[in-house]
Amino acid sequence: QEYVAIKMEVVEWSPAAKAVIEGKVGGRTVYLVSATLRPETMYGQTNCFVGPSLKYGVFAINDKDAFLVSYRAARNMAFQGLSPARGEVVQLVEIDGASIVGTKVKAPFAVIPEVYVLPMETVKATKGTGVVTSVPSDSPDDYATTEELRKKAEYYKVDPKWLDFTPVPVIKTAKYGELTAVEVCKELKIQSPKDAKALADAKEIAYKEGFYGGTMVIGDFKGEPVQEAKPKVRAQLIERGLAVAYAEPENLVVSRSA
Ligand code: ZZB
Image (cartoon, rainbow, N blue to C red; front, side):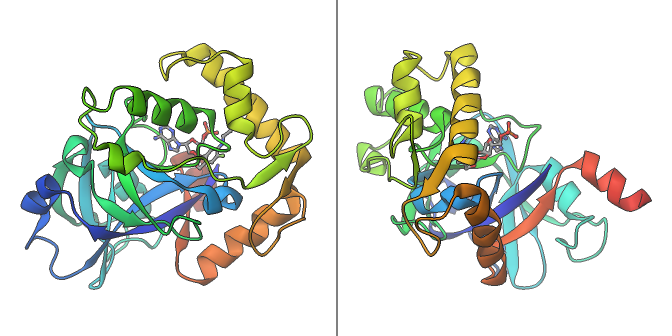
């Protein structure tokens, strides 16, 4: 699968992240980088997620930029032109996910221009970059997790002001309207991010409805079918330097032998 890696520039570190990172990045601009298959939903980003118990690193991409991602993603990136030298991983500092929570980042193309990093216990270390951009209007996982955090902010150690948003309409579907993920979560009676089976079903339904039956309600391609808008939004993000293409290992093997 070829992902789009969204570059979310750090605006303000959480105090814990600042203590770990300050003075360690050689003056580079640091981006939290999330892997997505749904670039057309970026208008509706409301926050960003990291796994609180996962390890991350800040990796030099060149003299100017550094990416905060999992080590595994940095190693893959080093074979895709995203490191100082091919195959070379340059880790500037290591940091755990819990420390990153509360950091404020820019959200490219989003109606909410700056968003906070929140914890998501179901982030997989083995997929993408380990950083996930959150679109509760169209991603059932994101909706279920942000609702859970609202209910138990203290337990999850999040400041309620980091959750001061509502889902932003991006795509209209005939069956579910403008907030597909919210409606699908209601239909399947999803109560928590731990309802793994129901969430997997919800994700599949939301993907299918959005991709095959969805129309954009926002952005430069408003009114166009999602299938047509998706590659155009992807291209815009990359052209404007707000994102880069990122492939996972299976694809790398194919492209190297090709
Ligand atoms: C924004 C977005 C908007 C996403 C949406 C989905 C949806 P897949 O198909 O299983 O590969 N993701 C990326 N990395 C991780 C990770 N390490 N752990 C958990 N989730 C991760 O899923 C790819 C999607 O899973 C990515 O696309 C990302 O969330 C998330 F409206 O980015 B997505 C119906 C889904 N809608």
